[in-house]
Image 1 (cartoon, rainbow, N blue to C red):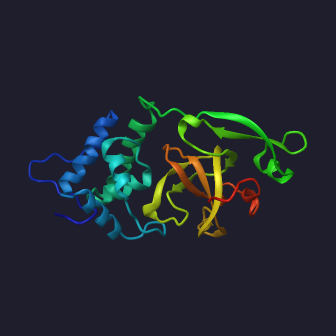
Image 2: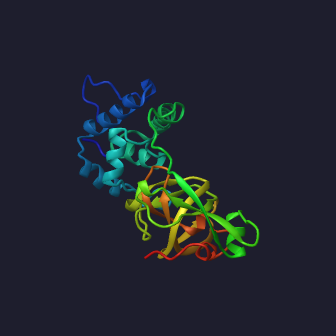
Image 3: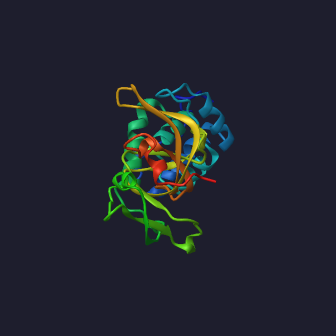
Length: 253
């Protein structure tokens, strides 16, 4: 069996061809075939991912839940996880663009057959400080602001505060994030937040790799893009000024 970057193809075995994929089912089947040809179990994929050299300053890893979602077609694999998985399975790096294009074609160019319904919210009004109102961009009268309360049928407790996420970022199961704690993603736009807490200090880098700022404040999201509940994102993805989210969110229990 070859190491990462060299795919083992037995004599008479056709090379894997992502260009032929036209459906999500075909793409998912091809991902599973890559693992089978590499002779790897889920645990083997996890171990080999951790042995890859760092990429963009981070040690690659693949959580078991991420693998399960990817290899059952439950959710679209994000590009970073897909790249790590393919390298682990011995797909040559020069072939990665073809796989990424296949991913885009089957997951992004066509609508999902069934989408999880968006959370249902009920409006209620409370008073917050003027600073908080400006932060949320929803000042009403003398500091009045609409907060969102979750639908009781969804099992979420307490009011949600809508904050504007200004950049794409990872969500994590823990406020002490590592690659293996990644839950999903959050995209720019308004999202419901529950509370804030203190965790591992996170440093924000700009496009040139320069440190811009850092914070140890983490915000708990009601739900992220993948439907994960109770996940965390750094306040740097939200805050327009230091400590601002703390002024409108309660501290997590």
